[in-house]
Image (cartoon, rainbow, N blue to C red):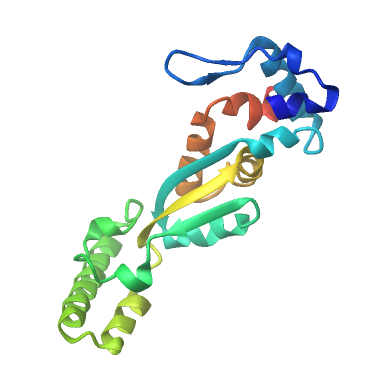
Length: 193
């Protein structure tokens, strides 16, 4: 909020504080200013770019391909498929499968079994051929964890671009965005007017 008050040197009007739990609470005047700047557009809400979020996200590779659209304003550090794909047994729970039909789920069980066979063989042989078999057979439903850093401005862009997306994973992500502190006022704000 200090940065939001820089243009008019209005720091004396700041009324935000930390509560007894250590949470930052926007005071009435600061919240009013934040909402007005948010509605005024990107040029006026520069302070939102300084509200940083860091989060661990586990999602299927097919979702990460779409998330990578937001490379500007984000940083992600993922678990390594290249170095660690063989470090634990494959299990159906390593894959997003909640929307699969029963027939497809049966087939997916076969794929997971085959991946595990290849993994065990690779553990024995350390053969690059076996490693390639794992990597190239790996379905895009494989769940990968990434630690992501972004700011509220980027979250505004993501939210409005993806809130009505076909993939349920985007709805889950947008629900998470809505759960962030002051998200309703600072990220979703355009809908309230």
